[in-house]
Length: 315
Image (cartoon, rainbow, N blue to C red):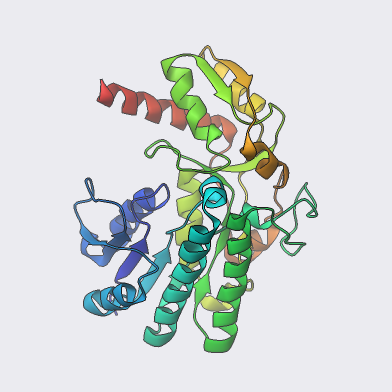
């Protein structure tokens, strides 16, 4: 059967780069975006709507004969703290709608979790695959709940749902969107425009990070392996590199970019303090041969090149 793929949240940070990758792999007419944003850029098949609308999801699945869903629609950490009720609705009710459709129509599902599932009681260094999950944000709570919901649908209904815990994702094609690790995107725009940046995290706050291309690679890789190789049905740890604001600023300066950085912490500091410094992803490497491509140096070069291109297009 030919793949027909639905990507919810397809106009977001991950979706806007996952969709072209899926189109390249499976063909442009094989991918459909569902997003509540007004579509001003995407030229392919597009459905405007909200993932909390169960009937819309089901109608879309039937209309386009969907075989796989990449469910990316979500409220992120900072945005979720501003509206916890909406975060629960979008992140949990939306996921449940997707899983119900997957159960009824025998669909394969990808859903991303996050390092936000971890909390202050979790080991901070080389955080294990199986460990304490006591998040401090509603975003993290929805991700833990979502992981358990995915595992439940697999065990009870045999829904083939697969997941990875995204670290902070660094990309240049979309602007920051309400996440705690957004400084790692913002800093490049300021470095190349003004040479000054005020970071909302302390200079030595270490967090796991990943360049967008590796996040897309992990997403497509895990969906491509035989189901028998998937031993984790909550969500896999994946890792690329860890860095602090100071390390990232230093890596930017090494590319001959003059950058002055100061710090003014906000709510995001307390969120970051509850997240790991580094991640143990040996299980993903063992089960489906996960291997990142981008280290911090390569990521910085890609970001500077991409942001320069974006800024020149604006002028």
